[in-house]
Every structure is written in structure tokens, then in C-alpha cells.
Amino acid sequence: MKTTKASVSTDLKSILKFPIYAKVALILVGIYVFISMLYIGQDIIVPLVFAVIISILISPVARFFEKIKINRVIAIVLTLFLTFILIAALCGLLFSQMSKFSDSWPLLVDKFTLILNQSIAWISDYFDIKPQKIQEWIIHTKSELLKTGSAAIGQTIVIVGGSLMVLFVIPVYVFIILYYKPLIIEFIHRLFSTYNKTEVAQIVTQVKTLIQRYLFGLVIEAIIVAVLDIAALMILGIDYAILLGIIGALLNLIPYIGGLVAVALPMMVALATESSPWYALYVLALYYFIQLIDNNIIVPKIVASKVKINALFSIIVVFAGNSLWGISGMFLSIPLIAIVKLIFDHIEALKPWGFLLGDTMPHILTIKKKRIKSE
Image (cartoon, rainbow, N blue to C red; front, top):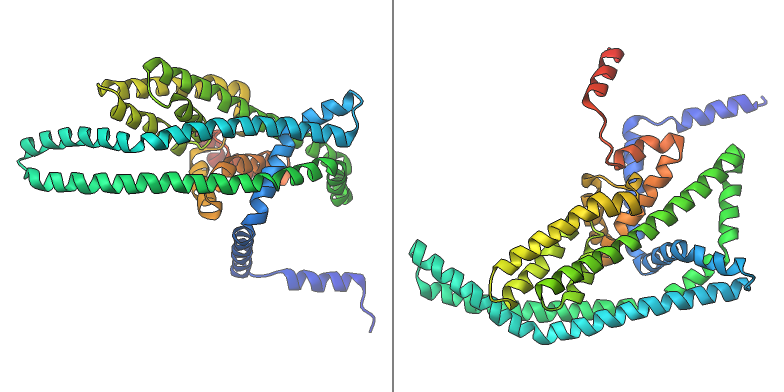
């Protein structure tokens, strides 16, 4: 007997028609394998992801050099050189500030311990607790703080050192990505040419433009917040204003959690270095004012609120990124999930998932009306 194409397609459909529990199991296994691959290959994937993000950011600069009749290879090399100078200047500034901070760490611990001593002495008098136990706890806490602080600073230096080693790999990736960008874009067009070539071309162009604007907006936001934080700390006379301001701006890229840590660090330094505890409250007030400016002016005008991720998924992806790739994963998680949302928003079948990641709340009355109509 001869088998027709219709019978073959029917047989394939019957084979691929799995029950729901089998589909769920396959999806879960696929997610597990995908996450395992990301974790195992992090030494290759993380630098590559950084390279892709940097390539998207500096691509307009390279394109500008090409427009003024500079050879394409020379334009890419010149763009990489300018980027390297900016990153090297920032790293040098951070290293100099961190070395000063590490030298003063024991003094900060002594002052902070004195504040704790005075506070706990008052608590012991008020709650009638034996001072001897409190003194033992203070001595133990002081030694632990010194050990933890020294270890944390050392670990930070090791991490930064490892990052410097990666810096030698990332420029190679960036150069290759920029050089083969036409090939990559053409590959995407040909991959989806069987569906709708015009629509795919529009989606690729729009998503590329939006990603560039979003990432460039993040950089501008970080610079503005860093300047505001440094200015606020300098006005108050807080030590290590430049280091704390830059760290605060970088942590501000991590939603919700980053902002809390960013304000906690200068408040602790203010408590340890200033004569009055009011300075810590002044820092809190100024940082709160800066956050209002960031949330109501900088983010809507510069970063664009269209790609803002809601609190639930922001916290989930930050913790997931930390578990998967460590500190690098925390900083990469938000740009990556924002890029995913941008792609979802421009593909009709994936728009509900893009809506789920966003922070646009539907009106309750609209939901009720839809339920009534469906009933």
C-alpha cells in the first residue's frame, strides 16, 4: 500500500499530540537543561552577554565613524579604544577610592563599635541586662566585623581582578560581533523568511533601536544618579563620597534591593565618621529625594517607562541571576529581562507574556466587565 502525504501528516500529528502531563514534564526538563547549560557555561556565556550589551551600546558610535568615510575595521577599533579609555578611567577611580576605604576600615569599625557600645549601655540600663555579657558580645562583634570586612574587601579585589582578566576577552567578542553584525542580522532575516520577511525585518529594526535606547538610557541614568549622590554626600561632608556615590548609582540599577543597600552604606559611614547621628538621617532624606527625581523624572524621560519591569519579576530575576552567575548575574538580569520583554512586546503571540513582565496595571472595572461579558 502506498502512503499519502496526508496520512503521514496525520500520523505525525497523532504522535506529537502528547497529554498535558507529558507536555509539562517536557517543558520542565527543557528549562532544567537550559538553566544547567547557562550555569555550566557561565565562564563563556557571561563575557559574551556583556560583549553583546556593549556592542549594542557602542554600535551607533562605530556607525558614525563609518559614515564619515573611515574604514570599517578602523572605525570599530577606534570605538573600542575610546570605550576602553572610559572604562579604565572609571576602574582606576574606583580602585583608588577602595584602597583608601580599606586603609580606614579598622578605624571605622572602632568608631562604629563605640556607637554600639554607647547604645547597648543605654539598653542595658533600661532593660536591666548585665553589662558583662554585652561587653563580651561587643568584643566578639568587633573581631567578626574586622574579619568580615577584610575578607569582603579581599574578595572584592579578587572579583575585580577576575573581571580585569575578562576585560581582555570581551573586546575580542565586541570586535567580532560588530564586524559580523550584518551577517547576524541577515541570518535572523533568513531564519524567519518563510513566515513574513517584511514583518520580521520591522521587528528586528524596532527591537534593536529600542534596546539601544534603553541601554543608553540606563547608562545616562547611572551617571546622573552618581553625580547627585556624590554631590549630596559632599554637601554633608561624608567621607568617601565618590566611592559611595558610584556604588550607589550602580546598585540603583538593581530595582528595590539595590536602592536599600545603596542608602544603607553611606548611612553607616555617616554614623561611624560624623559626630552626630543626624547626619545619617540627612543622608536618608537626600537619597530619598534623589530617588523621587530618579523615579519621576529620569526613568520616564530618559530610560523610558515602556520597558519597566514590575516588582515581582524584578526581584525574582535579580535573585535568580545572583544564584546563576553571582554579582554579574545581578547586574545583567534586569537588562536581559527588559530585552526579553521588548522582544515579547513586538511578537503578536508573545505579547501576553510581555504584558505579564510589565508594570501596567489593568483597571479593575475593565476586568469585571470582561468577566460579565464572558459569563
